[in-house]
Every structure is written in structure tokens, then in C-alpha cells.
Image (cartoon, rainbow, N blue to C red; front, side):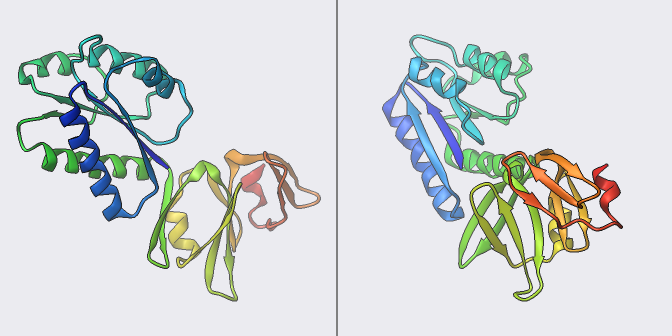
Length: 233
């Protein structure tokens, strides 16, 4: 799930930004949630501290009680993976953002084609998350996004001519072949069988004699061949 954390002290802009985000995500048919705040208060800071996945912060540079610059610094001290997008009605504050190494995605003037620029930034944010280890596929018209860290292994179903993505919480049947999925996954995945890719990040132990792996959630798999078992040693 992608989490959008929006903060602006002006109700008009909070509602505008949330509307843009909701419209964009509805078109993309992705699972998401918005978290909207009027100030950088204790509830906002709980979100910063939380383990929510795929955070996109859309931050007002100035609120009555706290600076978005200070908040961005706080976020980056705890989290280098989230996306930061700055909004402001004060273009002259741009140099303050630029001189800080926040690794932010964009700096948007609320009064300068805000909807178009924010939509483009959301495009980039989703692309970044795809690069950062997710698999996205469509099934029956619904687009699914699965964090690769959630995947235990991917195997081929020769009967249905599909691949099965096995996660902690479900199995997903994907209309792609194993070679295509091998191109999409990151370097944590290795081929352990001609019909299987395993996530080495999730493997707790491997028995070469029994040709079996135990994953960190207790699940096991014996989809290991002698030809490929060296990948696990």
C-alpha cells in the first residue's frame, strides 16, 4: 500500500492536494491511503516514526508552528527511502530547500500549474517505488503492487501456464513467464530450479543434503536442483 502524507495549514490546499492524489490513484487502480494534517503535530510525527510502507510526503514549507524544512530533516534522519515533495506559495524559499541535501523529488509552487506538476511528481514517485523492489501486475483488470521483500519465491505453474508468486499472506497467479519476472526482481532473487526463483533475503536456512530451504516465516520449499544449489551456498 502506498501512503500519502499531506500537510498544509490551509484547508483549501489540503483538500486540493488530496483531490489530486485520489484522482490520480483511482486512475491507476493501486491500493493507497491518504493521511492529511493541518500541522506538524504529534499525530504527524507518529506517522514519521511508523513502519508504514511506501510513504510519499507532500509537505508545506511553512506552517504556523513548524518549518517543513525542519520536518524534512527529521524524516531523512529516520528514513531515506520515502519520497519528499515540497509545496509552497513562496517561491523565494526555493533556495533554502535546494541548499539542503534532502534527496527530495520536487519543489512545487502552489500557484504555478500545481495540479499538472504534482501529477508528474506522482508519476515519478511510483516509478521510484517500482525501482525500489516492487512487482506490479494486472489480474482481471485490477493492478496489484507487491513489495519484493514480501515474496518468498516465484514458481512456474506448467498446467495453467502462469507463474505463482508466493508471499507471507497469499499466492498470486501472474500471466507472465519466469524469464520476464526474473528481469523484474532485484538481486536478492536467485534461480534454484529451472522453474523457481527464491528470495535469498527471506531464507533462514538451507540443507544441501535434503535439498530444502526454510524461510524466515517457517515455510519451506524443496524447489532446488543440483544444477542451481550453488546459488544458495
